[in-house]
Amino acid sequence: QVQVVESGGGLAQPGGSLRLSCTASGLNSDEYNIGWFRQVPGREREGISCINHGDGRHDYDESIQGRFTISRESAKNTVTLQMSSLKPEDTAVYYCAVDVARFRACELRRDSYDYWGQGTQVTVST
Image (cartoon, rainbow, N blue to C red):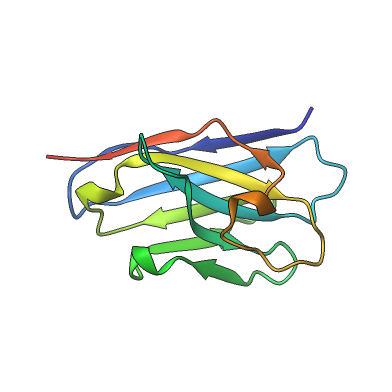
Protein backbone atom coordinates (compact mmCIF):
# COMPACT_ATOMS: atom_id res chain seq x y z
CA GLN A 1 0.00 0.00 0.00
CA VAL A 2 1.46 3.34 -1.08
CA GLN A 3 1.19 6.05 1.53
CA VAL A 4 1.92 9.76 1.21
CA VAL A 5 1.82 11.75 4.44
CA GLU A 6 1.99 15.51 5.00
CA SER A 7 2.64 17.21 8.30
CA GLY A 8 3.34 20.67 9.70
CA GLY A 9 0.16 22.56 8.92
CA GLY A 10 -1.54 24.76 11.44
CA LEU A 11 -2.30 28.36 12.32
CA ALA A 12 0.11 31.21 11.60
CA GLN A 13 -0.16 34.96 11.81
CA PRO A 14 0.36 37.13 8.73
CA GLY A 15 4.09 37.51 8.18
CA GLY A 16 4.82 34.28 10.03
CA SER A 17 6.30 30.98 8.89
CA LEU A 18 5.41 27.31 8.69
CA ARG A 19 7.37 24.27 7.53
CA LEU A 20 5.53 21.44 5.84
CA SER A 21 7.00 17.96 5.43
CA CYS A 22 6.12 15.11 3.09
CA THR A 23 7.13 11.45 3.20
CA ALA A 24 6.21 8.57 0.91
CA SER A 25 6.34 4.83 1.54
CA GLY A 26 5.35 1.58 -0.13
CA LEU A 27 6.86 2.40 -3.52
CA ASN A 28 9.08 -0.03 -5.43
CA SER A 29 11.62 2.71 -6.13
CA ASP A 30 12.65 5.87 -4.34
CA GLU A 31 13.35 7.65 -7.63
CA TYR A 32 10.22 9.75 -7.65
CA ASN A 33 9.48 13.45 -7.82
CA ILE A 34 7.39 15.27 -5.23
CA GLY A 35 5.05 18.19 -5.71
CA TRP A 36 3.14 20.48 -3.40
CA PHE A 37 -0.36 21.64 -4.26
CA ARG A 38 -2.96 23.67 -2.46
CA GLN A 39 -6.71 23.99 -2.71
CA VAL A 40 -9.25 26.50 -1.47
CA PRO A 41 -12.87 25.31 -1.20
CA GLY A 42 -14.68 25.83 -4.48
CA ARG A 43 -11.49 26.26 -6.48
CA GLU A 44 -9.19 24.00 -8.48
CA ARG A 45 -6.21 22.37 -6.83
CA GLU A 46 -3.11 24.27 -7.95
CA GLY A 47 0.55 23.35 -8.04
CA ILE A 48 2.89 25.61 -6.06
CA SER A 49 6.24 23.80 -6.02
CA CYS A 50 7.97 20.54 -6.95
CA ILE A 51 11.39 18.92 -6.74
CA ASN A 52 13.18 16.20 -8.71
CA HIS A 53 14.51 13.18 -6.85
CA GLY A 54 17.75 12.64 -8.77
CA ASP A 55 19.24 16.09 -9.27
CA GLY A 56 17.30 18.18 -6.77
CA ARG A 57 16.14 20.68 -9.35
CA HIS A 58 12.89 22.36 -8.50
CA ASP A 59 10.14 24.59 -9.79
CA TYR A 60 7.83 27.19 -8.25
CA ASP A 61 4.61 28.75 -9.32
CA GLU A 62 4.95 32.49 -9.80
CA SER A 63 2.12 33.14 -7.38
CA ILE A 64 4.31 32.47 -4.33
CA GLN A 65 6.65 35.33 -5.25
CA GLY A 66 9.81 33.84 -3.74
CA ARG A 67 8.30 33.29 -0.28
CA PHE A 68 8.43 29.47 -0.28
CA THR A 69 11.41 27.12 -0.53
CA ILE A 70 11.29 23.40 -1.36
CA SER A 71 14.15 21.11 -0.32
CA ARG A 72 15.14 17.54 0.47
CA GLU A 73 16.05 16.47 3.98
CA SER A 74 18.91 14.11 4.80
CA ALA A 75 16.31 11.34 4.64
CA LYS A 76 15.82 11.48 0.88
CA ASN A 77 12.26 10.29 0.98
CA THR A 78 11.37 13.45 2.91
CA VAL A 79 10.71 16.80 1.27
CA THR A 80 9.97 20.04 3.07
CA LEU A 81 8.25 23.23 2.03
CA GLN A 82 9.43 26.21 4.05
CA MET A 83 6.80 28.94 3.91
CA SER A 84 7.69 32.46 5.03
CA SER A 85 6.03 35.87 4.90
CA LEU A 86 2.67 34.15 5.01
CA LYS A 87 -0.40 36.02 3.87
CA PRO A 88 -4.09 35.38 4.55
CA GLU A 89 -4.51 34.35 0.91
CA ASP A 90 -2.14 31.43 1.56
CA THR A 91 -4.89 29.81 3.63
CA ALA A 92 -5.70 26.46 2.00
CA VAL A 93 -5.40 22.71 2.32
CA TYR A 94 -1.90 21.77 1.21
CA TYR A 95 -1.32 18.42 -0.51
CA CYS A 96 1.83 16.45 -1.21
CA ALA A 97 1.90 14.31 -4.36
CA VAL A 98 4.24 11.69 -5.85
CA ASP A 99 5.21 11.34 -9.51
CA VAL A 100 6.78 7.90 -10.05
CA ALA A 101 8.36 8.70 -13.43
CA ARG A 102 12.11 8.24 -12.96
CA PHE A 103 13.58 10.49 -15.63
CA ARG A 104 10.99 13.21 -16.04
CA ALA A 105 11.42 16.70 -14.67
CA CYS A 106 8.78 17.57 -12.12
CA GLU A 107 5.74 19.53 -13.23
CA LEU A 108 3.11 21.67 -11.55
CA ARG A 109 0.27 19.75 -13.18
CA ARG A 110 -2.18 17.59 -11.26
CA ASP A 111 -2.27 14.87 -13.92
CA SER A 112 1.49 14.31 -13.62
CA TYR A 113 1.11 12.79 -10.15
CA ASP A 114 0.17 9.26 -9.21
CA TYR A 115 -0.30 9.29 -5.44
CA TRP A 116 -1.61 11.93 -3.06
CA GLY A 117 -1.60 12.64 0.62
CA GLN A 118 -4.69 13.49 2.61
CA GLY A 119 -3.83 17.17 2.94
CA THR A 120 -2.87 19.42 5.83
CA GLN A 121 -4.69 22.63 6.70
CA VAL A 122 -2.77 25.92 6.69
CA THR A 123 -4.59 28.92 8.11
CA VAL A 124 -3.08 32.41 8.12
CA SER A 125 -5.06 34.79 10.31
CA THR A 126 -4.79 37.18 13.23
